[in-house]
Image 1 (spheres, rainbow, N blue to C red):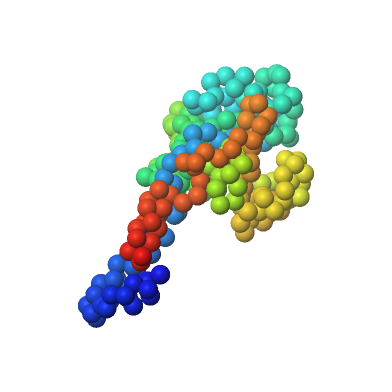
Image 2: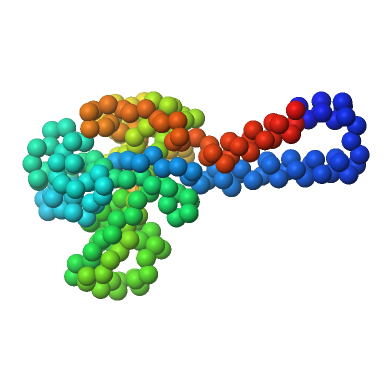
Length: 254
């Protein structure tokens, strides 16, 4: 591309230097933009593991209240076979959550305001109340309370990560579940459970060991009608800023 330009229009050494500098600037700037989100996808799902009989849907709807979750029925809509306020322990349910571009566009997620009861600490909030949707270290890094010194009645920011999908992988999936891995999980078990191709799950989670027993993966989820909603054109893929720079680079070279 650019070789053709220079062969048609002779350039001085100064022009060559300026063109090289401009191209370098255009090539390197998008690299930092790709790691940031440019637009939210509005909604996502969080896979909540009911670790004991006290993990009632009413409790979950209280601590994870949002514009998508006001009452238990809002959870029931996304979980086939759930009809009561309580659900058997050691099972998973999908909880609807907002998926926003937060922290100046650094990542996708949603922050819940958790009112701390007497005796709670970061570890109890992460592994208990929010069922490993966050980690203890993440809570410590995103809050001002010292470790083990959270006052009862205080408020802790609980930021749950989410995904909007990736147009480079597939445009067929636009709703994603934030899925905390457990010791019994594996790539094959999750693929069997969700009836999704293991290769597809790997493409959405490159380099992730699904048998690690901890950490988060993102898997396509079904909406309240039991369907996989497609990816919106404004979600996933390159950011708007990156796309503009790529187009500008082509204009300069031609």
